[in-house]
Length: 188
Picture 1 (cartoon, rainbow, N blue to C red):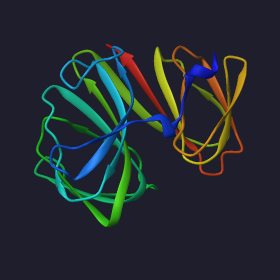
Picture 2: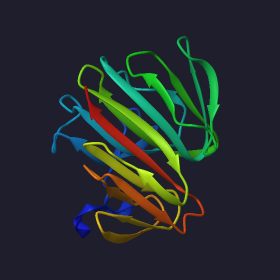
Picture 3: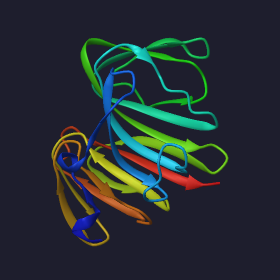
Picture 4: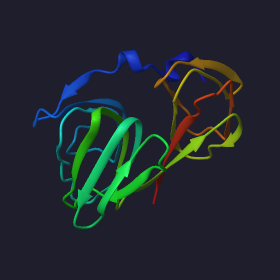
């Protein structure tokens, strides 16, 4: 594993939403260089500044985790719920209508999206210790400063930095006061 597998938060480019309610910063997509119309899976971080509808993605499944703030979700298929940094990641179909409202200020979230006929995703919160990865595509996101060891190499990650763990069997996390999130993408 080389240093280029570090996915630094500071290097992500902010792309404004069409509705003006926030920005997205892509972390990775597959295949590399894929756009919104041809990705097989996509992982991004967003800043939600204003209330509004979620974009509809036919044939896509999504998982959302809030990193900062509180986000109220509402839609006929899900009812109403509030997601916070303490909430488990929330999985939902990307082709159903849903609105999001930040409560008390902007929200930062992670969003994993997969074409449901090609991939499955799972997102798990991790603390210190040795954790199985075992997925062809996997990314670790630090929720605060952590040290991670994978593939025989040690890495220091700052808050919201990522580590590409594609094909790794396991990762060891140390000094993980805030923990981390691991997202895995598996082909069907």
